[in-house]
Length: 96
Image 1 (cartoon, helix red, strand yellow):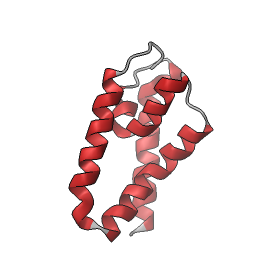
Image 2 (cartoon, rainbow, N blue to C red):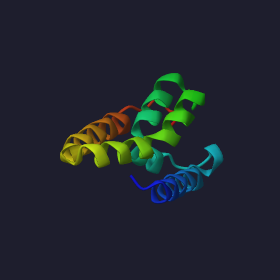
Image 3 (tube, rainbow, N blue to C red):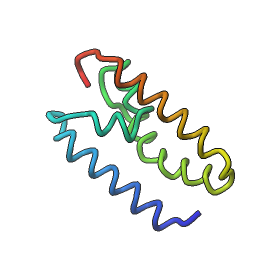
């Protein structure tokens, strides 16, 4: 696993998501696509708490570790990610 590219990708995606979320007044579609697990938790708790923030920061490095150690799992990871994205996009509680 290459640390520097993973950090660059993580920070870039975080900044992109924050930009589109507009500090809470924007659109959360990008956040739901990139960080579906965090946004699914946020849908149920009605706020993005510290657990969600930590999960957001470690999600991309975890993906990188899994892809580095088990490259054959890429389709499983993509499938799980897509399923959670679909679930997150279909849940609408009005907050996100």
